[in-house]
Length: 255
Image 1: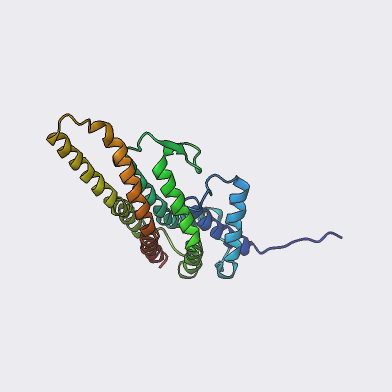
Image 2: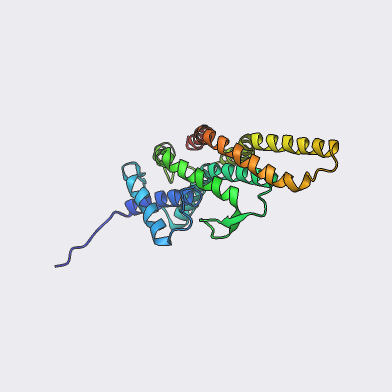
């Protein structure tokens, strides 16, 4: 006699709601290489996180109609997307830092292969994005993301809340901080390069016979690499501080 597996319909609905919330976030979470892994591996990861949250799955009071359940799924996916966007801003700030440094240092035409998209990308932006992804795992921020979801399932259980306009306000406000953090990290490099430009301009003004223009680009690239190597030692502290700020915003959404 074959054994049959029976599961309550309410339990299946709870699983699907939590799955929609987790899947919506993992589209943007900046785990190293997650966008380039095979689809089955990503599905297994999302299922594993969903199953790990089984103790805080919601208890649905009744079996909802299919139209109402579809609305719940859309709300859960939207909530997950908001959390994922906030976490994804960590990588975006690093990319902004690399882009600002690359443009002013003369690395605009130096490209490499982005490991996530397999497309040509500025080399400094790709390096900064890779460093941010490694820090995300090294600092244990992926565990905090799972804790935020576990807390949200208790404070905002699926099937019992609606879309809140405050989510979009928090996400839009946080998006502006990407430029602030990127400029904050790149400002020492940009300031030094401006000083190099002013110095070379004065030397060219004083001695017109010197071919300063031939040395300006190599000097700026070497100076930029020297300062970036120093700034990278401060990068973990700024990254951790920014992550704390974004996680506070994510916790505010889940209240």
